[in-house]
Amino acid sequence: MDLLATVPFLVLFLFVAAATESWRRNTAFLGRWVGAVNSGDIKTVCRLYHLRSISFLPTFCGQHIKTHEGVLMYMIHFLAKRPQCRVVEEVHHNFLFIFVTSGIYEFKVEGSDHPLVARFSFVVVFGRAIQHHSSVKPPL
Image (tube, rainbow, N blue to C red; front, side, top):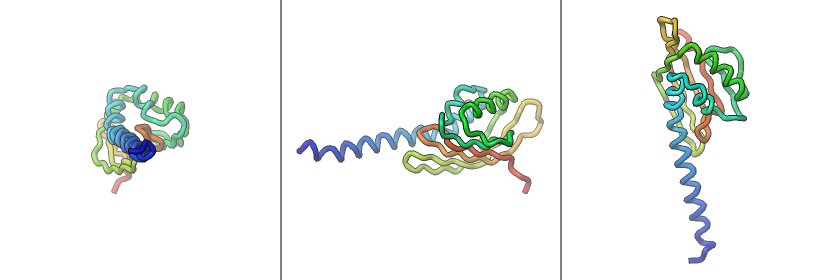
């Protein structure tokens, strides 16, 4: 077999391998995020956000955060409340290297008797969030 004839197969193999690894990292994203929030692990939480391309609309802040430093500052204040997060409902879609998940989660924070129910969405590329939106769920 001609060496040049194997190049398309090699390219296809590498593409499938990269897509499979991306799928694995992306689908594990929400569980890793919730686990890091629940354990108060600020380093892991912040590593789950893209370093340069971020659009973050957090639950407990009215600002549109667009930098990794902004994510860090928000998470320092947020994790100081010792939140416990539980995913109530989740829908996700995987498109090769892009993972989109959305649903409902609830937070219990230290000093509060009632959980806060919020809607969320993440757009994840290669295991890191490039977009995160979270807002308090309005009453029906």
